Length: 425
Image 1 (cartoon, rainbow, N blue to C red):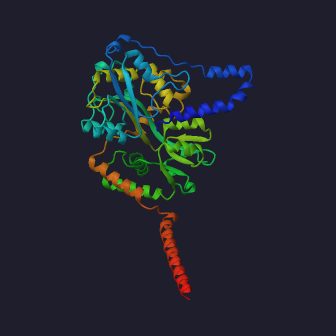
Image 2: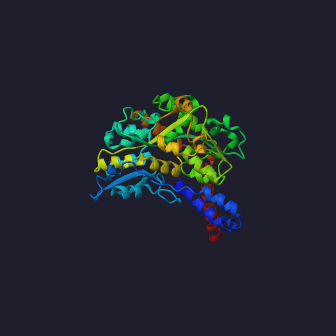
Image 3: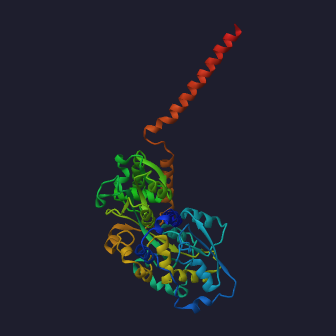
């Protein structure tokens, strides 16, 4: 996930490549291009006094977020969110990144660092709540929570809505090469990731929770199943898939699909939109049989040293202009109703970013943390799956190589024996 900079870099390269051609364009075309790129994001704050409490205190907060998951002003006309917060409040931000929920969890569990804001995903949030790793919020300090859409209030991972404020959300679907896969979009479902016609051109998520979820969807199980037999059945289905997949990957999906090295892969909707913006031959579908609805939310760790300042930061992230800047930069969907209203109709109705309520209610499931036993079982099955030799023609490569080494060694010994005999005579 979180690959916005790749999109920005590609845009810069494209602009450099096209500069000569643009010089020969007509004045009308130039004016049209200017109009399309004319949006300059601005920040309007309704209650500036609220943000003045710590202005002269010289404090700082530590924010730990996914990589490329906030507007940093690198695109012309966009807001640098953290810089705007510091300018408004006087609070300095120490901003660092992580790549996975598990990395975030390990960092906090190990106690090696102190953070005031973290933005984990749903199932990890419920785990952290259970283990006392995050603390309850004082919503008196977060008045902008009023902008959060009802759909994302009291979520399954925080049913009393005491610990979290949603940051972004999205779904998982399938991205594919439309020039080489001629299946109608409405007929594409999760079974395409097992299709032998695309053998060695299929990618799969390289994390157990997402991979098992896809198997659970195929088998009709709950995405939060803790049943041992169901988890084992999912593992068997994933073992069967190993015969046709090219690789287990995460962010590498962007490069592999973009370069045409693969034909089909599961992908997060926000990243899929970014990828399709760069490569027009790619398509994306959210299977009608169902999918995972994921939510990343802002939390305050139990050991945070600047709780009130952290709540001010959360409130700032819910300012409509800031939420809008975030969602348009990273491509993921916003739970902020005011920011949603600011979006272009094309985005609201693209069938990817914002799905209708009926589909969300009937065909999506939010991950919750599994029991310790179920987590261990899934991890054991995943480790076994990843370590076992593929049930393909490649399974003989190692034995053949070893046999060749033995025969070569025997040949060398025989040759030396013959040479030594000849030297004797």
